[in-house]
Length: 464
Ligand SMILES: Cc1cc2nc3c(=O)[nH]c(=O)nc-3n(C[C@H](O)[C@H](O)[C@H](O)COP(=O)(O)OP(=O)(O)OC[C@H]3O[C@@H](n4cnc5c(N)ncnc54)[C@H](O)[C@@H]3O)c2cc1C
Ligand code: SF4
Image (cartoon, rainbow, N blue to C red; front, top):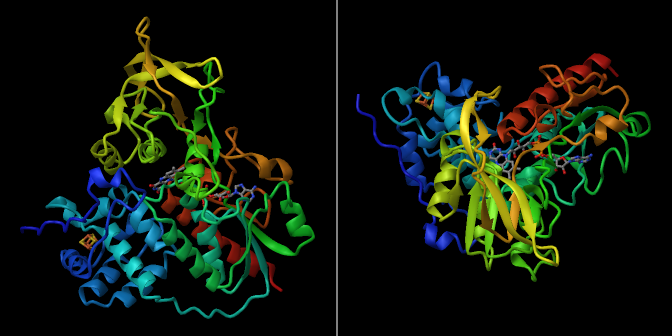
């Protein structure tokens, strides 16, 4: 059977988009969405659903699109997914629902992510809201951290009628969605709109509260009457290389760089008062999505002429999504593969001037299954750069485990939980990057969802 082609999505032209922070992908029109949705075979045992960590009822919402019932499609999606406009944009669908779509056998899978995005954007534009009026349960639950794990857990508990308060260390909600993923991939107005929906469901919010410092979990539970706590604090602690010169001016962690740009809007300085100092030649160290985001953000800043990603393995081993790498190449980002920095050199007044790099070759596969990079002796060379961004990965911060009784953690800092998010302390649950280390939005959401269910069971078992 011949399969119709996937409906392409319009994008901003690379030459235009490198001068702005507007969204690159432009989304489907109604007609395009209906056309794409009509390719779905409506499988009776849909394999796509099993690939989605929050089990969105995919064929049902797609069928509603073909019937032009966009509002109904939205209700179907939001019955299991609290952040569809976000997921439709940033989930690695090629590894999840779309990978499991039956059409892969004969052609391209249904563009499930794009259709989800279409429906969610339609709902936001037309102010369509969920109708949830749960019976109030008089029990207080604290959610720590407002990334996708915390927001999902909060959303599900609110729909069950719990009294939910979200505690967030920063002044804005959203976690990585707000401070990490750039505007041109995930517009902040979309994140804000999805958070507003949660507030309408009744979430109380306390920003600028660092749990472990401002207040501890023990205090929340013993003094403030919270009967259960969910820890969704992410993995925001940046890793550095430990090479000479890393403290020079002009060396950033990707976290700092992206926070300045996304959260503090430093690209609009002086309209916004957070500055960002970048030179003409920027090196980004790493090969993941964070490296791609940092590189593409740097390229859009005024005064930057060249951005080079320096990665110690080759293109094949890069952990970043293929689509992100393609976008980076289209935009003119350069790549220095099989190369690793060994020293950053500075000017007399302490700014980055250049970086010494050594060539690598690939050896046998290591524990991650990827071929291990090995230095080639004597292959050292110098790159003239004036800004260096380290995007080497992050790990969970130990503040909460170190200030809370009876919470067990892994050696690398991840909180230990069972499958449903229960920690070693009764009443305290955890999920997302704080448990797994840096992973994905949808996995964090899946963990928040499972924990909400476990919290409900726990509080029911406690009775009145
Ligand atoms: C630059 C970047 C790009 C990414 N791109 C993608 C992508 O395209 N697709 C994808 O699926 N994933 C992507 N990821 C990964 C994804 O964003 C994370 O896996 C996901 O956000 C994890 O969610 P979380 O809720 O566990 O934690 P986070 O999103 O990290 O949220 C944790 C929140 O907790 C707060 N917090 C921390 N400690 C405390 C405390 N003590 N008290 C109070 N609050 C606290 C933090 O301020 C933060 O707001 C990206 C990550 C980064 C950094
Ligand atoms: S597997 Fe693909 S074709 Fe089948 S229902 Fe899911 S999206 Fe439609």
